[in-house]
Image (cartoon, rainbow, N blue to C red; front, side, top):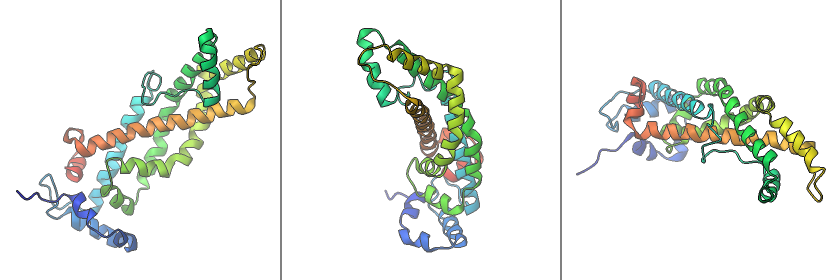
Length: 249
């Protein structure tokens, strides 16, 4: 039995340099022609390039909202082994040395609090992700349609990480303050001064803690965006709107 080629198979047959050399209008025509042909897998024909871009935006928005709901709750990071945020390496080393002595309590508290900070900060990413969706161009949509299971997530990670880092840093610092992590860190610094041969921590270690929380927090968020995107691409039950069914069906 001969299998009917899918949209992605047809797009994959296009020479890589062809799309790069095309104007935006030509790219739209190419995508529209492929998606309106016999390559549709769900029996739906006539999908336009504009509809394809709309479907990508809808998939990304669903992924973003799902990811934020997953991580932006109590224990969203702390109890999830896939995205749990450990202490920065310098603090983790001290933690491992003190734990056998029963002296790692402050560091254990700090590890919990940095995860709590990420859980509180995650919902603040919503607006910047939605802004990135609105700015998605058709050339991006062509690459995403022709990409792998997390190609949209990969694109958004590249596009939004600098802005998200800027957004997350003050939010994370405030969240860590509310969670008690900053006070715990200050208490830890004071305690280590009284421990013979213990490493001493300065202001740079506090900055490292915040930067570490921001980076790992974003890693967890992107992880779950990718999971939702892959599910939308592979599972018809995840296509909860007509445009998702039309483009991904």
